[in-house]
Structure formats: structure tokens, C-alpha cells
Image 1 (cartoon, rainbow, N blue to C red):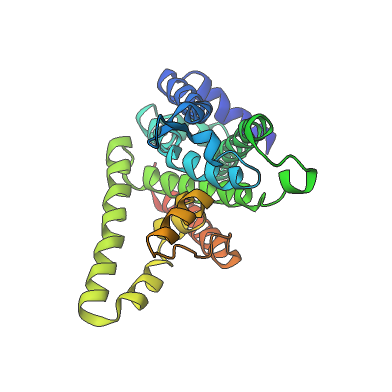
Image 2 (image 1 turned 45 degrees about the vertical axis):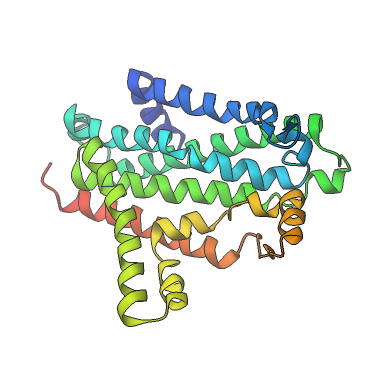
Length: 276
């Protein structure tokens, strides 16, 4: 495993675009701290940090959701990592040098896991620091409750990057691979619309859509905005009930893991059948 990872990180180290995108990604993750400076439009302006977004354990939910939006920067790195293998002919050279196709796919998958793990640890550290500074609750059992959001974030990144890896192998070009992911995202909505409009109820159409890859990844971490007590109280004053289940569902984790296996397996089968 370490040998395969060393091969991949050696390639990334000499790819300027990948290094720039990786730095931008982790820079944006760090910029989550700037949210504390944003003021909520009440009166003279109330800093968002003062309405509880950095309270433990809510911060684990909020920060993993926000960080999940930024995953597209690393997706470009994953996709370009694969397309460069074709354009620079390093894939063929690796196979000539004795690397099997299975080891090649595993090296890419290990890189996906490494990026997801580093991102998760990074978000954990940033969130912990912000929470210790701004949270109204600093008891040990409260600080380290709801860490399942970090697990969901980790699984979400692995699933999403595995999809990017598969698309990179399928179409061989970064721009087309990313375009393919966008098209698939739109396709999921079209499937949902057609099913709900013509064949089944909208509720059933949504349940079917929940099993599709991008939707299942999105469902791992629900939007945290309506969970805030300030938002809940405001909604109650105008007669609306925003309560729902914000927890991480094991079934949704399982769906994403199944898709991850499918993407990696299809990547391997595709590589096996191609004449390189």
C-alpha cells in the first residue's frame, strides 16, 4: 500500500496544477474560520459565531456540510490525475515496469482514501479549534459527541472521488470527465422528474432518487441551517415547523459504500478490457 501511495504522490508532486488546486482546497477549508466574521442582519448586525454555528456538537454538522461543498476542487485533482496517465503515457510505462492493472487501480483508490482522510483530519482540527474558541459548551462529552458527521464526510469524499476516478478512466479527459459528472447530476434530477410526473408519486420518486450515487452522497450530511435553534425559534414565531431528522443514517452510508465498490470495480474492469 505504501509503495503504491509513494508512486502516486511522486506523480502529484511534479504536477503543478494539482499542487495549486490542492493548496486552494485546503486554503478554502481553512477559510471556514472567516464565517465567524460574517454578521447576521439583525439590528446592528450579529456575528454568525454568536448565534451558535460554532457550538459543540453542532459545529461538526455545520463544518462538514460546508467542507463537503468544496470537494469539487479535489475532484479536479483526482480526475486530472487519471487523465494525465493517458496524456503523459505514464499508465503504459507503469505497466511495462511491472505494475499490474489491479495494483494501478489500487494505487488510485489508496490516493482517494488518503485525500479523504487528510481532508477529514483537517476539518476535525479546524472545527475543534473554532469550537474551543466560540462554543458555549466545552464539556468533554459534548465536544466529542456527534463525531459521526466526520465519518459521513469521510465516506462522502471517498464515494465522490471514486466516481471522479471512474469518469476519468471512462473518458480519459479531465474536462469531459467533469462534464460527465455534471451531466449525471442533471440526469438524476431528470429521472426524479419523469418518475414523479408520469409513473409514481413524488415521494416514491424521491425515495428512488435517494439510491442514485450523487443523491445518496448528498444525503449523508443533511443541510444544517434549519437545525440552528435561532432559526427554529424564528420559524415557530411565524407558525412553521422545521423539525426533521438531521442524524447520519447507516443505510445511507451503506448505499454510498456500495456505489464506491461499483465505481472502483468498473474502473478495474474498464482498464482490463482496454488495449493500452
